[in-house]
Image 1 (cartoon, chains in turn orange, red):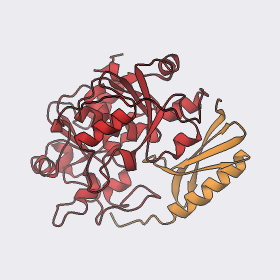
Image 2 (cartoon, one colour):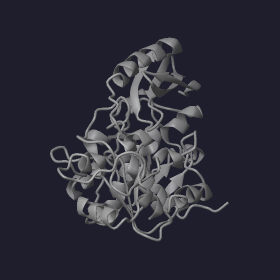
Image 3 (cartoon, rainbow over the protein chains, first blue to last red):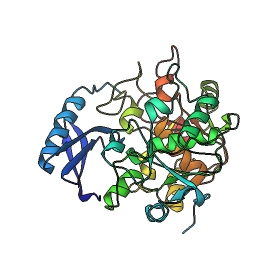
Image 4 (cartoon, rainbow over the protein chains, first blue to last red):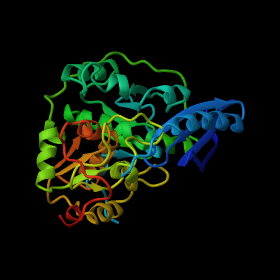
Length: 73
Length: 288
């Protein structure tokens, strides 16, 4: 099978830049969230639609990013 | 445009697509875990999980020679197999596996330029079945530690103001955060090793995940005084992002003396009494 409808979008979550990458594989939409810089994967989720996969990924990403502490540099 | 110093260590997505059935070639997807692989991978590829298969499971270390031999043999890889590594996060963990394969002397190991991201973005075939290959015979060479930096070398490098490349994000470098956003903190202190320069790994990559051209890379690192005339140590938080930069410096730019400090900030930032520089790079570091 081939990935279809590949998309990337950038947004801000809990004050941090996040990239959502989504595509369809078979009947399932896959969505991965990463933290842009440095680019580490935060979560991978799936859904019946792109919106559902993105929403689930954003929920987890928001929870994880909210725990990131800023220190005085 | 100048070609890479060692173009033979990179393959393109098109090349891989044309060689999927080559029996002398083994494709290996390397990620933090194998969840991405399970969702769909390049047909015929096997998976290595960085967390469990490319690190000692008791102490913090790379695989032993025997463990490495067993991993490759059980993956159906013999000494003359061409190993093509790719993965997510722009090949961070593929680069880690490449570095470890070179430590143990695997002759023909290459990285898929653009990694998993480019393969998926191009809409190329993926599979979900997990292939199995007959166990092979594999004999690793004794570890070549000339490409691995240990703490004493890093301390000396810092004292002597020799090139240290911190490839983390600017916020990690300054000490504003102790780990990439959303990931667990693994150090007690934030900041960077004194006299290090901050050249985030991502500056070496294009948006599609491929490596930038030789000329762009030379300008990027040369602009920070990293020109290969002196020994270079790269580090990050746990050594995987710096594997990516180590690969760029050693194989794409062809610098001879480049080492990866896999202890990285997780070691340095937990050391009692270790000097730490916070904020942006010091004037002395810039001038050195």
